[in-house]
Image (cartoon, rainbow, N blue to C red; front, side, top):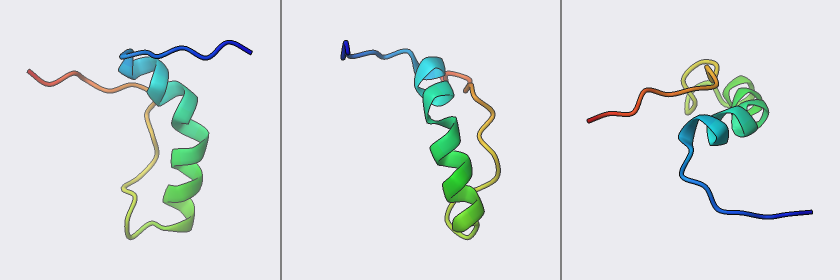
Length: 43
């Protein structure tokens, strides 16, 4: 297994989608909706 650090927010969102969707279903009060898998970088 290779572990590496990334600042690629689209990759992090894609890899975290399952966990985010699970938490949004279990705790809808705290997590808003489904994870889209990518985010727009503000700035």
